[in-house]
Length: 225
Image 1 (tube, rainbow, N blue to C red):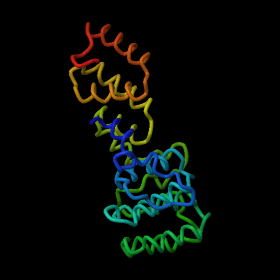
Image 2 (tube, rainbow, N blue to C red):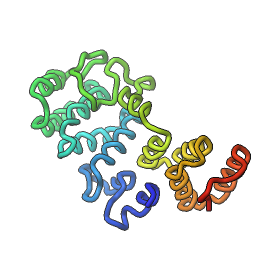
Image 3 (spheres, rainbow, N blue to C red):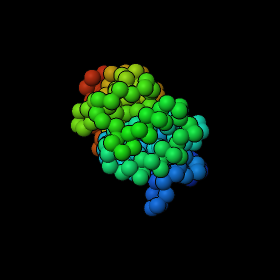
Image 4 (tube, one colour):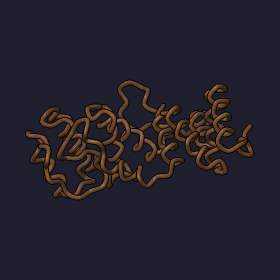
């Protein structure tokens, strides 16, 4: 089964995609049936797109307070502190209390001494892998260094799958189309792209892609149906 088919059929099979999981008002924990790693990627994407999405920050910290993601708790808290500055002291304190069992004592102390002031931009932070924000600059230019490194290592197919996890069907389709034009023999890319056309019922996009393939390669790939 293709990745896109898993996304569309997940709720039927009992595995809920994180894009569709957080629908019940008032619930902040991760619902049963959601893969925690997929949920982490989804929430990290939300935080990266909108640094002041407080609900996404809170969900991300709470998710990191549960195995197998507890090593990420400090990074999730750092992002919350950087995003809020000196605002939301009560929220920051409550989440720090909840996450403290999973934190290195020195990391917990660093955050506690900044409860009133917030983490100022440019704060020298302990080395860790799970914070998204550059502590020196927070705003439009504060794109996530970790995400940049991860994306640079990903193939176009892997990047398209990440877009699907974030619910960006159109972006994933475009990336898969370009990948197939470059490598029409790639059966994995072909399968996922055809699945997107099928589930979105976008016959026009499929026909346009067939024309592009014929124009570049003289024929559509074997298995194009």
